[in-house]
Length: 188
Image 1 (cartoon, helix red, strand yellow):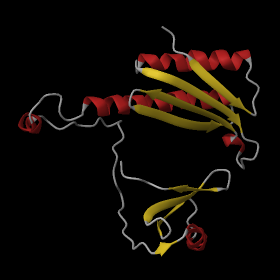
Image 2 (spheres, helix red, strand yellow):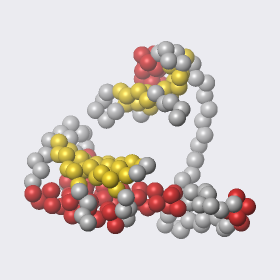
Image 3 (spheres, one colour):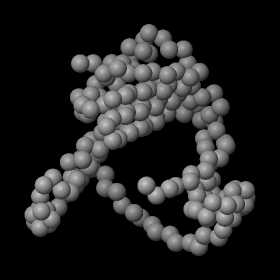
Image 4 (spheres, one colour):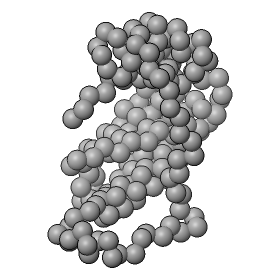
């Protein structure tokens, strides 16, 4: 069974060659993960990027039962960006499958799980390491004060603050297009 791939071009003409290439590359992902419900590929040409090597953008989003996997890659050539995105999403699929396989439970007692040997990473596998921890005091402020504080401190990517209007911790971040976004987390 071949997987249906939805392709959404932006500032790019979707030629038959590009369409065939994306379908050929992305439809192979169902070999790695067989419960994919939706596959979306966004292709974009961004004229405004300063670096010409970042103008061609390929973004792949996979939706399945209980998960969403997404990656975005940039290159100076659209086909290179597509190849890089497929490689990145394959790595994310492998990590996702690994997490599902290592979920505690599976009908075993905690004492049995404690006797198992720890998973040893290969030399080539990347290990997630927290290299730095930072603590700071949150001062209540509104969104506009947070934006001014973010600019004053020189934080270019994000700024965490306690929103005095909503009595919640928020994250203010700068988007690629220069505008700002606000994340308002909620406990689920």
